[in-house]
Amino acid sequence: MSAEVVGMIGILAFLVLMSVGLPIAFASLIVGFVGLVALKSLGVAVGVMGAFSFSETSKYSLSVIPMFILMGLFADLGGITNDVMRSMRAWLGRLPGGIACSVAMGCAGFAACTGSSAGATAVVGKMTIPEMLKSGYKPELATGVVAASGTLASLIPPSVLICVYGVLTDQPIGMLLLAGFIPGILSAIVYIGQIIVRASIFPDLAPTNVEKATWSEKINSLRGLWGVVLIMGLILGGIYTGVFTPTEAGALGALAAFIIALYRRRVTIQGLRASLLETVTTTCMIFFGLVGVLFLMRFLVLSGLLTLMLTTVATLEVNRWLIFGGMIAVYIILGCFIGAIGMMAITLPVFFPIIISLGFDSLWFGIVIIKMCEIALITPPVGVNCYITHNVAPEVPLEKIFSGILPFLAMDILTLVLFCVFPQVVTWLPSMAMAS
Image 1 (tube, rainbow, N blue to C red):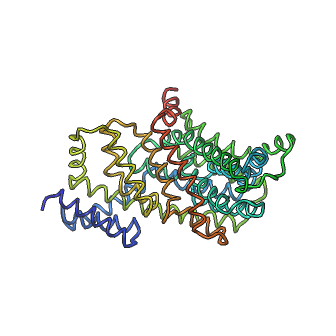
Image 2: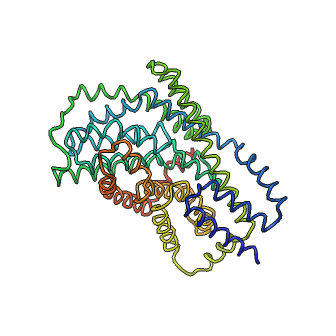
Image 3: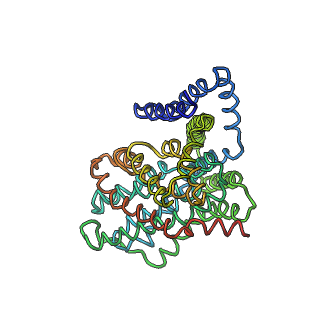
């Protein structure tokens, strides 16, 4: 049996294990280990697993992940979320569907302090869904905007998913974080535009008798944004100017969020303990998954399967955008059944080398993949953010949440098309940073 055939069997085995519900970390480790045994020997597989696990998890670049997670938790502890939502409500509340618009932009602001989509969805959902329902908003819009806007934390830096992509593809995390900023803000603006249009056409979707803030209240509300501006300035400004590495920027951001929480007297022993414990738990889960995925990638490289696929694609006489479209179709299908990290784990070992060989920009492709992961977070029947929203608002049936998410899914597809037609949306900020 050739090594390439062993690699194909490994991929099929991985998909089977995933389909029966085995976590990605275990499925990838099992397939990678058994595959190395088949290609080499048991002794080699055991030795590689031990050395590989330590070498991969001890990389300095990975330390940015717990820093971003801790920063988001400290930001929530310090009440930054409340400040952002209050300010967005004051400025956008008078628009058609104003509260929903403030949720979309508020999530964008909160995303600048946290890299967790699930965390953003849960926190913002608890704050806004009851108010929207009480104000007469249709449940579909109230829950749909929360589930969709929560995904912005996956794109707007700091983003844990962007860091995961950088580790899996060995791309500069700092440049990737810069590349995600403008696309993330653009995604929020597209959401808001869609809400305004729908609320204008269908007045019963959202009430119009919302209390309008005065100019004095609007100006005063901006004072509450200083925490977000400070944290975002430390991260993006430090990375853009080259003063900080992403890890240093994340550490300073976490420190700033903690100092803000101390200044506001929001820090308690229980809250601090919960934040640290959740940071450790989430980091361990992500690291375990990364080790499994990278171990599986090592097996596939040794099998020669990736080289075979790359050579086969290179000989195809078709337009490169057709191949890219096929990859997007794969992501759309996978998004119906698998979470974000799982999608990257399955596809990147194969897709990334092909994308580079076709001449696509690696940073641009990374943001496209993160956008596809955002879509996966709200795509039925898995749609993790939809289930989190349902947990926050159990009175709204899951069917209505999935129904309410469809217009936002359409906007995500539109935004993805804009990235393809105007790649400068993604590449401009990192190119400016590299030129400076």
